[in-house]
Each structure stands twice: as C-alpha cells, then as structure tokens.
Amino acid sequence: MNVVKRFTLAFASILLVLSLQEVECKKKDEFSKFVQEVDNVKSFKKLIRTKTNVLVLFAESDSAAQKRFSVFGEAGKISKGTATLAWVDCADKEGKKLCKKQKAKPSPVEIQHYKDGEYSSTYDRKFTVKSILAFLKDPKSDGPWEEEDGAEDVVHIESEKQLNKMIKKNKPLLVMFYAPWCGYCKRFKPVFAEAATEVKGQVVLAGLDAEGNKDSASIRQTYNITGFPKTIYFDKGKQLFDYSGGHTKQELIDWLEEPSEPKPKEPEPSWADDITDVVHLTDETFDPFLEENKKVMVFFYAPWCGHCKNLKPEWNKAATILKDEEAPEKLTAVDATQYSQLGNRYKVTGYPTVIYFENGEHKYDASSAFKRTAEGIVEYIKDPKPPPPPEKAWTEVESDVVHLDDSSFKSTVKKKKHSLVMFYAPWCGHCKKAKPEYQGAAAQFVDDKKVVFGAVDCTQNQKTCEIYDVKGYPTIYYLSYGKNEEKYQLGREANYGILSIPKLFRPGFLKHEKKRKNIF
Image 1 (cartoon, rainbow, N blue to C red):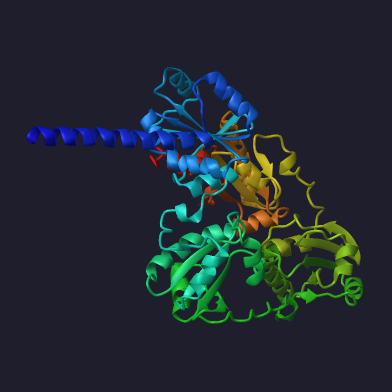
Image 2: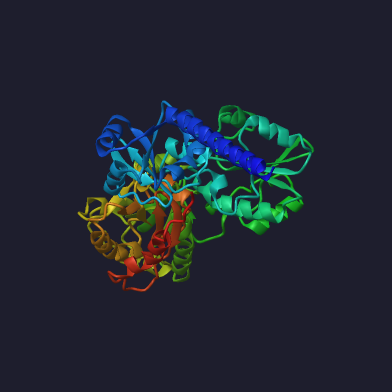
C-alpha cells in the first residue's frame, strides 16, 4: 500500500511539473507574439536599424526572462505599432556576445532603450505595464507620479469615470489637476503627497494628469482648466472651491481644516499713487517737464516687471536725496504700459529702460551706466557720462556653454544625464563675475557627451525662468535628463575661482551617480 501511495505521489508530481512547463511554454508562446527574441549581433543591428523605438530586455538566463514575460509581453501587446519590444538571453552563446557588445550586465535583467538606431538610455523605472508604456511614449519625461517615493497616499485617478465615482462618495476630496511638464506642479507634488499622508482618513488627496489622460479634453472643459496646476476641493458630491492656500505642507493642511473660496486679489498699488519724491510723467506732462528742467532721468517701467520693482526703492531714495540737497536734477518715472506712446517714441522694448535727458533732449541711454543703488543713481545724474560700449552678448562669446531659450531648453536638458544651467540677466554684476569661471568649468566637461553647461538669459526667456521660479541672479540648477532638479546658489564672495563651480555641482553629480537600485 505504501508503495502504491509513493508511486501515486511521484506520478502526480510529474504531472504537476509537466503542467507547469506547459503553462510556461504557453506563456512564452504568447509572449513571443509581441516581444521578439534576438539571439545574435547581426539580428540586433537589423532590429534597431529598421525600428525607431525599441526596448530590449537583456536577461541573465531564460528563466530570469520568463519571470518578466507577463508584464513585458502585455506592454508589447499594447504598444504594438508604436514601439518594438525584444529580449536577449545573455546565457546563450551568441546572446552572451551580444550582451557584451551592448555592455549589458543583467542582474537578473537590464532593459535598454534604442531610438532611431542608437542607444538612448537604460530603463530605470518601475517594472509595470503602465510605467513601461509611459516610458515608450516619452523616454526622457518624468515617470508617472505614482512611481515617486512618498506618493503612495495620493490617489492617482486614471479616468473621468473614476473621478466622478470618487466625487460621489460624499467624502472631502482635494484633486490636483496637473501636467507632467509643469514646473510648478513638480514643486507642489512632494508637498501635496506629504499632506496626503498627514490627513489620510480625513480628506482624500488625489492627482489627475489632465494632459496625458484619455479623458483630458472632457475633464479640462468640465472644470475650466486653463493652466496648471489647478487644485479643486469637493465635498458631499459637489465642487466647492479652488485651492487658494500656500505651497507648504502646513499651509495646505491648515487650508483643509477650513476650506474657503479664494480671497479676491487686491490690486497692486500704483507707484504713481505712492508718496515719494519721484515725478511721475504722462503723455501730457512729459515734454513740458523736460523743457523746464535741465537734467532729468526717466525710468520707463512696467508694473509687473520684477527688475523694475527691485530698482524702485533705490530710485525713490535717490529722488529724496536730491530733493533734500535742493539739487536741480530730477528723477522721473513713466509707466510705459499705460503711456505706450512715450514708450514707442523712445523705442522702449524692455524693462527697466532708463534715459538721461539734458535741456529737453534725449542724450544717453543710461540703463547700464550707473550702479543700481541710490548713491549710484545720484552720482550719475550729477555727472552724466556716455554709457560704456555695449558688452558683446554672452551668446556671441565663443565658449563651451550652450545658450538655451524657451524653445530649446526642454529638448536639450532631456537628452543629457547631467545638465547645469545658469539663469542670468545681462546687467547682473555677480553673473558677469561668474561667467568666465562657468565657461572654464564647461570646458572641463566639453568631451563628456552626457554633460551640458547651459545658460538662459531671463530678460529674453521669461517663460522658462518662471517655471524654475528664478528670483535672483545668478541662479543655477542641476538636472538629470531634465528632471530631479537641484538648486545651487553661488556665494557672494568676489572670487569665483575656476574650481568653485565644479565643487558646487559635485554633490549633485555624486547623488545621481549612486549605484542604480535593482528595480526588477
């Protein structure tokens, strides 16, 4: 009887093994419909030459690959027609040669991306169908928000149907509608995620990609989303308020305790309404005032201009100094957005623009002729001199720095593992001191194709500078493939030694050069 039992158990085990092998074979057959096996160098070269968007799974063994067949195969099935997925067995004789040639070191697998016949990058995101599909759509973009560390308590909404279902649950709900490229969204996401953890069980915090979502157009129309991020509070099945709190975790939590309508923005007070000793000129008063006063400096400004706002306090102080001294020189101001005829008359194309008039006539363009302090302004108007010859624009100086603008910034930094970008203004003294050293640092990395030293003139490229919240100059950011930005502030010491800039960036380099985690 014992012999019969042992025989029965052994036979059953054999059947089980054969059954499992049959399942694996079926799985592999299904997998092979959507993922191409490549077993030699020649076939591999042909594949990446004839296909434009290729993702290759290099496996240390056949069994290592089989464990990933279901996810990789499903991604291949969904992306058929837009991408090609392939795999290589690095334990096979010919496969081993191929893996060595492509410098693939699977442990147990490594996934590489090839674009237009060339190696593009190594896949380093979560091994899920959604993450693979997002990567294939745009390999250099940020991964889905749900992949980010700490975002586990944010509910990631996939469709309009899911959004409506959550609203109908009659629970307090705060939804952040965002776009993957949005700089402000990227900065708010970590704060939003931290708050989600803090209020878990009381308020649901959710995120919805209102650009990449299949229902994006309908969602944006329904909730009047014209910019990002837009964050809306729902309760008891109704849309109640747009979020109007601050951008720190505590400010967000405080707002959730007492949600309310956004307070109407108070109009910014007009400079002309301030009590100062600056004379504010209009279309009617401009010419008579210049005829009556021998030496006049006119500050053409726009109310929204940040650089103008920085200069205003010094201009006010200087006007008071002149008045207290009973000096004949006069400091004036013109809102060129309100009195556009005057701006056009004197070819004002940027702000601030400062012009020195003598005996009613335009004598010097003085925007860069004086120090931007009250003392510097007074010193100049008392002893006006022709402005120094304009410096050659940095974009015209031969160097290894790559000059970026609003149209080229994103596409450039997305392709580089290490991007170092200086945001500057042409008139900025600290920027001028830093430029030679920055150029020297760029020269040190000129042969490294993974590194770019970039520069953005914020007086000409306001969109990019606003995304990175540039408040002063120079501001330097480190990015890796256009993301993971780290901000560095140069010291204000006079000596910007050639080694100081590489030292500043070293922590960023080391951080992003850490050994990649095994995510598979």
